[in-house]
Image 1 (cartoon, protein in one colour):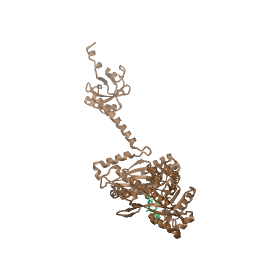
Image 2 (cartoon, helix red, strand yellow):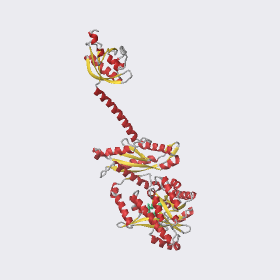
Image 3 (cartoon, protein in one colour):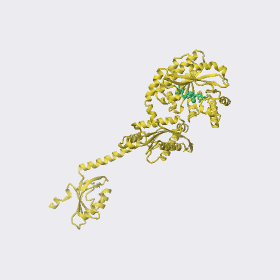
Image 4 (cartoon, rainbow, N blue to C red):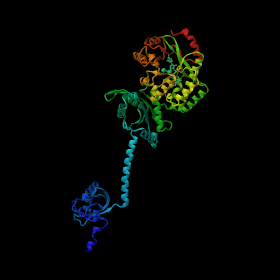
Length: 572
Ligand code: C2E
Ligand code: CA
Ligand code: CA
């Protein structure tokens, strides 16, 4: 063994390599071959680039080679070499030429030190993790049906916006939009069509918003829209009204032409008091509910002042509970008669509040504030109890009338509704149950139609009669007639009011009377105000009526007096 053999670089624990300016490998030691999975001398004669990753190749051509040719050397450059199996390994290389005119380049190749390697592995892992997180975020932030952001995403975005230090300068409008008539499409054509429709609606709305605006699907047929910018209420209202019009244009799904519309509520930010995302959404939702009540396909602006004055709905609720306890509520009774024979069939119980400060209040003055509250449910319970007491009282005195009470959709959906009703009926065992009638209000607000339908079926089994109030308004009346199998339809007084002047209303009225016959329901016309109404209605085959022409709602004693006089007075 010669000295030079003994100290050959062959056995050094670093990589040694010699290449020429045309990238051919002239020599490499064991270290290189072993570390990169090559056989003995396999690399000699090969292209240098077989060892370099793509990024390192570019680095070599554009930086390393020119530098080493010009300066003669370059030190400690990070590169990535690839093993025979294609696995990249980070290295630190230094290059030099043996003399200024030499074409040979000498390489020393060391593993990038352990901590550096770990660092780069960690960086890599973090990148992967971030990708995964953002993927997950995307999934959990996206509504799978429409691809829009979902409730969680919007709420987070809103809270970030509001929580931002610059939120003082922020102005936006937040709208809650709910489709009208969507459930009917779903019921009639099935969920696949409903789903397609939702996608089209989402697409159309998204296409009609400005870039900065944001629309999210909240679930079902509910959407929330964030309109950003310097907003006065009129601008927001204009954009949203446009959106409602656009949604009311027909949609084509599987060669069906589908007509729906939308009701929306909107609230504005900033407000004089701090609010969070949930509160804003609730405000917009509440305003949307008002829009539904006001007849759908419209926009309502949330009234912050009103809410504050009602800030406690709690206060209002407490007042109502007190008023129940101290006997300030009262039922007035309005007769229903057969307009052909003059027979009095029964009476509708209508709620009044003998308010200690404000005098006698009609339902419109206090019921809206109680909508969807437990105080509202308690009051509803009081109405049934009190109507039943009156009914029993009349029954015991031989006055055989039907009494109807109004029940709103929210109360009907209350889990205790049926049990409480049964308890009340137990207290009047002698009363024929068919004397009690439930007038179901706001059928359009009924969400769980199956549940309500089963509740009403149970009521009917008890003998109670069911009537659908305000029939003909809203979009859902017909569907509900089928699902809720009512005994009686009450034609809304708006149709009766206008029947004498509006051919359209007259046509609807005729239609309702017609299918009341088909479904074998009684039909009662509300709002009979004149003798002309009486005549036209009876000619059309609607004999049962209720209205100011017959009598206004009255306290029970006045009602009894009216009842005594009625046979002499009659209708004409
Ligand atoms: P509704 O169920 O449609 O009751 C009929 C309303 O029309 C009553 O108003 C009645 O006074 C009025 N009315 C009756 N005949 C005529 C007429 O010829 N012309 C006109 N213009 N109006 C007539 P009221 O008592 O103010 O009640 C309004 C609404 O409040 C009711 O409408 C019903 O939806 C609700 N309501 C009344 N009592 C109760 C109740 O005990 N519980 C619930 N949840 N709602 C009730
Ligand atoms: Ca009614
Ligand atoms: Ca009505």
